[in-house]
Image (cartoon, rainbow, N blue to C red):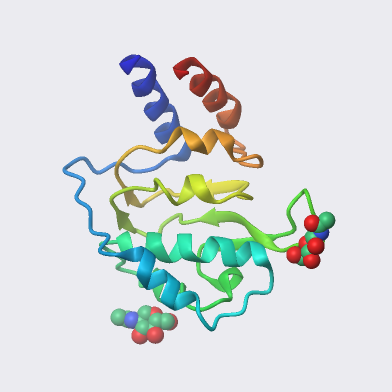
Length: 168
Ligand SMILES: *[C@@H]1O[C@H](CO)[C@@H](O)[C@H](O)[C@H]1NC(C)=O
Ligand SMILES: *[C@@H]1O[C@H](CO)[C@@H](O)[C@H](O)[C@H]1NC(C)=O
């Protein structure tokens, strides 16, 4: 069982090209839920799907401990499709909807204790790139449940699905 978990983590890390910083993972999330609720008030989103991912992005932003290029300076307001690193598209299940379809953090040099609770919660995500960032921790097996996630360099989705099945 531990071996399978270990392999799972390696597969995720290699496939995503996530740079790992080893060390203690300390929680730096104060009380994100309340903050996000307040921030949501008064914002209007062009699609309901974007209002769903907004609190997830803001919560993740609050965990970022280093952002030398001030990337997160653009992660403000309801226009998620213009945030640096975030790209919107029509989801496969509804061609008139607008959703967060891909994330490209390549070269952003962000430091965060984990992608867990963020990446695995983005329902319509199809692509994720994060070379040259410093994300530690592991990624939840929930990522295998994202219906559209696709890694062009590997059969990541299928492999993760397989490993998750083995863990059950
Ligand atoms: C970061 O970017 C935001 C938005 O572009 C800007 O308002 C802010 O002044 C910037 N902060 C720093 C420290 O450069
Ligand atoms: C498709 O998305 C649009 C925009 O969000 C929404 O108004 C519409 O109800 C959706 N259609 C279906 C079948 O879910």
